[in-house]
Length: 137
Image 1 (cartoon, helix red, strand yellow):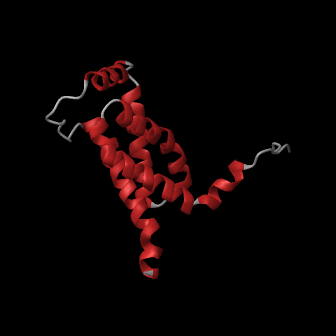
Image 2 (tube, helix red, strand yellow):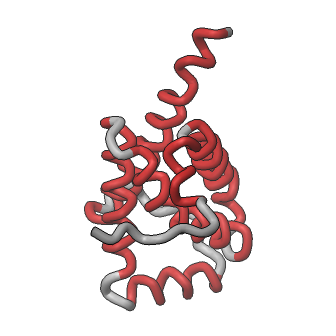
């Protein structure tokens, strides 16, 4: 049991890294086939609007790819968790309000994010100081 507890953060980090590396890469290469059933109208409209900006899909895909790579190589993990947090919020809200079929995977990603943020909580302590002053040299 102790051995499993020791490796659980690495397993969670690698799983989350794989999810975001693959989905980020798919944003550029489109190798994952779209679902056979059509998206609800509101979800399709939302995705069309994001694609219509010309920058949002590449931006989100690029962040996902970067975060996935950082998590997989175990570098800058707290930074990666911070960068991906707003994207995870967007994924969760998209699936809660527009396309519920993807909610299970989104929920797993949210649980992995929360778990890893908790395990790396020492790295987040300095940014959670209520009041501080800038360094002036």
